[in-house]
Structures are given as C-alpha cells and as structure tokens.
Length: 103
Image (tube, one colour):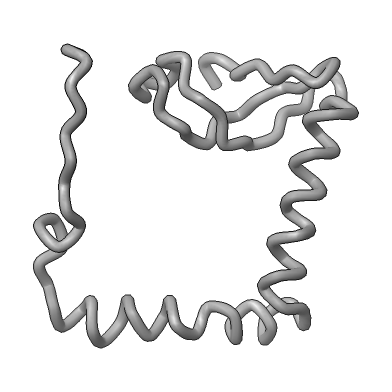
C-alpha cells in the first residue's frame, strides 16, 4: 500500500526440502509427459491452443452473459493489489477487456 515492493524467496516460504526434491521437482520435470498422456498432445500444443483461445476471446469478444479467465493487470478487484498481473474473470468487447466484478 506504500508503493514499496517486497521480494520473497520461495525457498524461505517452502522449507520442506524432501517435498521439493521428492515431489515438486519430479512433477515439474514430467509435466510435458503428463500432458501428452492425458491429452495425447504435447504441452506445446496445449499452450498454443490456450493462446489461440485467449486471443480469440480478446479480439472477437465474449458472448453476452459469458466471461473467460485472463491474466490481466489488476485494477484492485477481488483484493488483488493494483498493477499485479493476475487471472481474473473478464468480458471482452472491441479488443478491450473488463474485469467482472463481484462473482
């Protein structure tokens, strides 16, 4: 709130080294294989599809009464600090997005 930024290290917040080494790191290393197993497509195809969906909604717009989730700069909605990039429910029209309030 005072305009200062606090930097925290993940290693200071997650101190369970056994979990990091035994669960987290192997999961991250195998994420591509897990996506291929689940979808039959590579993670690159999954990411490309998500990008296409995102741009489509942004450019073409959302249908009336519908919204999508997009990573956008916070305007302070939902208690997320203003200026932080965060995933919000948004509607899109004419290439502009608007955060859906109070869902």
